[in-house]
Length: 187
Length: 269
Image 1: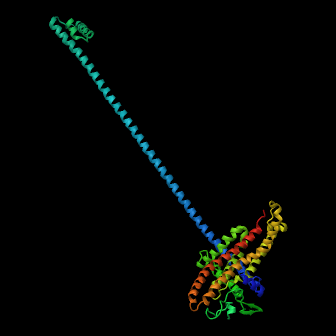
Image 2: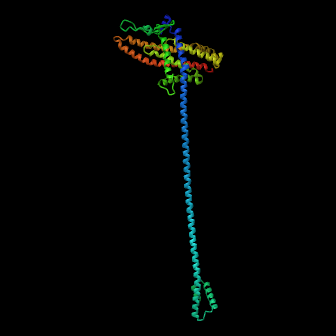
Image 3: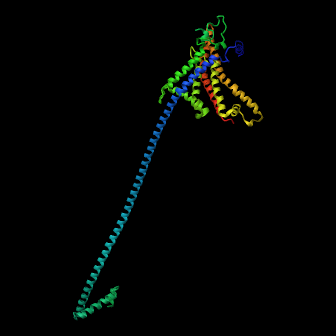
C-alpha cells in the first residue's frame, strides 16, 4: 500500500483523479444504454409484462367463474337430493299412517261385523225361543187339558172353561217357574 | 498490439532467468492508447467501456426487442434481471409510486456496471473497466446530480438542508456538531465513497488476479512449475470469487443509489 501510495504521489498516475476523456466516454456509454433502455426496451417489456399479468388474471377469473359455477351446481344438486330425501321420508310416513289407519278401520269393521252377526244370532235365538215358548205354551195347555179330560172325565171341551182352565194353569206355572218340582209337589 | 496496450505488464520473463518478479501495481492500470479518434487517444478500458454499452444493448435488445407474453429463454433471463432490480431494489427502497421513474436508470446502471466489471474475467479483455476511477466516478456523479437537486426540490432550501444534515431538535447541544458532520458526510464524502467502493473492489480484485496470473507465468520454469500450478489454482478460485464480487458490487452501487434517492425523498424527522 505504501508503495502504491508512493507511486501515486511520485508518478502522479491517474488512478484516483479521473481523466476527462475516460469520464466522458464512460458517461456517454452509460447514457446511450440509459436512453435506449428507457425509451425503447423497458417500455416494451413493461407492456409485455402488463399483458402477461392481464392474461394470467383473465385466466384466473375464468377459473374462478368455473369454480363458482361448479359450486352452484353442487349446491343445487345437494338441495335436490335433500328435497328428494324429504319427499321420500314424507311418502314413507304417509304410507305408514295410511297403513295404520287401514288396519284400524279394518279392525273396526271386523268388530262391527262381528257385533252384527252376534246381534243377529241373538235376535234369531230370541225369536226362536219366543216361538218355541208360544208353541210350548199351546202344546202344554193342550196336553194338560187332554190330560185333565182324561183324568177328570168331564168334558173340558167347553171352550170357556177350557180357556179359563188353561189360563189358570199357566198362571200357576208362571207364578212358580223357578221351582217346577216344588210346584208339582204342592199340586 | 504491444503488451502496454493489452496487458500493461511484462510477459517475457520466467523465474531463474535472472529477472525479478514483475509485480503488478498502478502501472498495470495504465494502458497505452490503441488508436486515436478525433484527437482522443482510445485505450483498452475506453474500448471496453464502449463494448460494455454495446453488450448490454445487444443482450437486452435480443431479450426485450420483440418481447412476447410467453417468453423465450433469453427474454426470461432478461426479465429475471430486470425484475430483480425493479422489484428487489427500486420498489423495495422507493416504493412503486416514487420508484417507477428511476427504474430505467437503475436497471441500466446495474447491467452497465456489471458488464464493465465482468470484462475482468473475459479472456483477452481481462480488465475490469471500473477499476479505472473515472468510470465509477462518472456514474456516482450522475447519481449525486440526481439526489441532491431532488432533495431541494422536494423539501425547499431550508428543508433540504435539514434533510441532508439530519436535523433533529431532540439532539440538543450536539445538533450543530451532528449537522456539520452529516453535511460533510452526505454532500462531500458520500459521492466519493460511492465511487471508490466500486472502484477499489474491482481494483483490488484485478490486482489479486494479476498477482497470481503473473506468478503462474513467471514461475513456469524448473522447480517453479509446481508452484506455478498452485498459483494457477488460485487464479481459478479467484476468478470464481471475482464473478461473485462483480455482480455484488454492481448490485451494491445500484442499491446505494436507490438509498440516496430514498433519503432525498424521505421526510426528515
